[in-house]
Length: 122
Image (cartoon, helix red, strand yellow):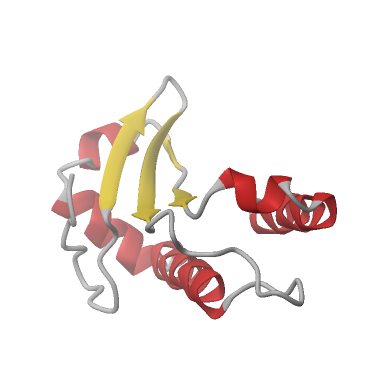
């Protein structure tokens, strides 16, 4: 779904929402796509404010969707009540950001990017 309105959440609308399921769970994926021109790093190797802001959006969505009342609203809004009675609800967050060549030119930046991904995925 392109730019879905999220019931009871008005802070930010994701670019896309993909709701998939498997034999164990319902997995909504909140997807944010940023222009490839946005940089991961400043010249000193710190993450840019744009990148940090994009990650902050995920934190907002994550905090919001973990609230039981918001999960119930989400499930109801998208008509997933029957399916969710039998399956776990496991949200995912996907950020498409920047260009790979920016971090491939600097091995330390690529390692730092990988470490950030590892921390966020927990």
